Length: 155
Image (cartoon, rainbow, N blue to C red):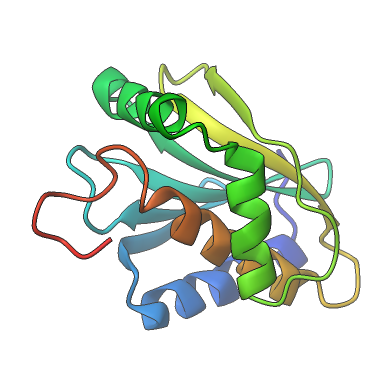
C-alpha cells in the first residue's frame, strides 16, 4: 500500500480519538494502519483500521486461535448474527448507512480476523467521522463476545 499524506493524517487523527476514548489499550499508527489494542481481552487482540485501494477496512485481529474460537462459540450458543450485532452498534453511534458484511478468516500474518470492507473512501466528505464510528461500533460489538473481556471486567 502506498500511504499518502491524507491517509497518514486521517490515521493519526483516528489514533488520537482512540487514545482519548478510553476503551482501547495502546494505540499506534505504523505501516499504514491504525492498531488499537483490545483493552480487556483474555488474550492479545487488536482493532485495526487499514486502507486498501483508498477504502477503509476495519477489523479485530488475534493470533490466539482460542480467542477467535470463543467469539465463534458465543455466537453459536446465543444464536446471534454478528452482522446484526454490528448494525445495532453502528446505530448507537449514529452511523448513517448500511452495515458492512464481516469476513472471518486467517490472514497472511497468521492472525484470525473478523474484518469489514467499509465502503468508505478516504476522499469522501466526513470519511474520518464515519470510519471512527465504524471503529467504535466494532469495539462495542466485539467486547461482549467470547473471551474478548476478562472475567471481572465490565462487558
